[in-house]
Length: 52
Image (tube, rainbow, N blue to C red; front, side, top):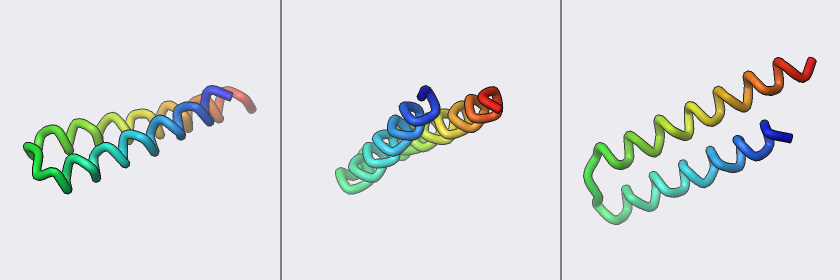
């Protein structure tokens, strides 16, 4: 259950990063969003390992 929520959060974060890219926001804001999305996907992966 948590893994699905974290994957959804990662999708929202990636969408936010792409939106900030179109708005010509600072590069560090985009990088932060991408890093948080990667961390969310990694956490979702770890949750799927613990379900086994």
